[in-house]
Image (cartoon, rainbow, N blue to C red; front, side):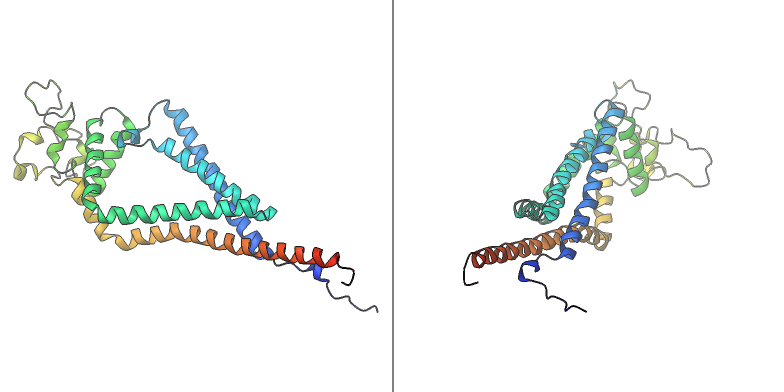
Length: 280
């Protein structure tokens, strides 16, 4: 049998196939997710033919979904091609983008904690704007009703915030049949009731708080939301960590691959330099 030849120096590579293809698979997964997000966003815009329900809450989620999806598509595309082609420029772009996004998320969390009063004021404005447009969009209406039933609350700060809506407004000259009422989702509904009385909130704003408390939830949704956040800090922290870990993994893998590619380039330059040497 012939003697097995030892691998030559030119066959050696610093680039680990494990790191290379692990980074590729990592980016491929999020690349597919980004395409799904863009597709859902486009579908939502086509079906609605107008601003969606959440557009009254400052941002249209369909547009936001498309923007996030396109950005994720471009970033993960750089990661996919950069890892397969061992392109340092694309990998650096991928790593820098992930780092910037991670730092922005971290800054947003810190600013939200430090300026919690301003954040609360912004949330109040968003909820009040949603109350004003409650009857303008069926999806928005269903969203508000779901939130009020889920958190057992009514209105923003108090149930009387519903007077900001033109249909529930409590002024004497309001011709609406729902004058001084609140939505049925504010009512204390019994699970034993087979049929929901959608008029159970009729005239509740005319009552004193103590009287109304027997029929509806009088607590505002903002306080209930704040209490829910305080009670679920560990869960929210886990979600934030779950979002941060993939970003950190992507940054780490891309930096490892970049360093390996640089070492491989130095090795190739060294081999070329010594190959031209007649004494090599």
